[in-house]
Image (cartoon, rainbow, N blue to C red; front, side):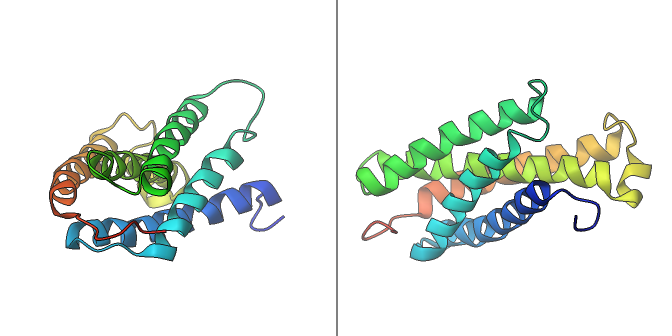
Length: 163
């Protein structure tokens, strides 16, 4: 075990961090109207794998994290179809932006939850995750994604699809 983590949890966390990091670069590309080809594929793949590796953590009952995982996979399936099947033609461009960003948001949402659960200085601020610092953080993240997502949907106009 690494840092007290099971190997699966370590892989899950690593995939999640790579998915968030590449997702933020992907998001920046949408905002600037540029696609990032291979990096986009890494973002989509690691975000799919993050959801898939999260299901057995724990597998004894259905938790909110499992529901978030299913929702993320559905969003990613639509984004992948929009990109690789429909090549972002017509309405598929904004569908792609909306679904890919929603999946990234869910990954960041879970990251904020985990940060408040695992990082001592944040846990002290919101031990039950019903305190104002936690709620403010989540509302700010959501507002940022909504506002910047709208900007991205308007600005992102690829000449060809980003494979």
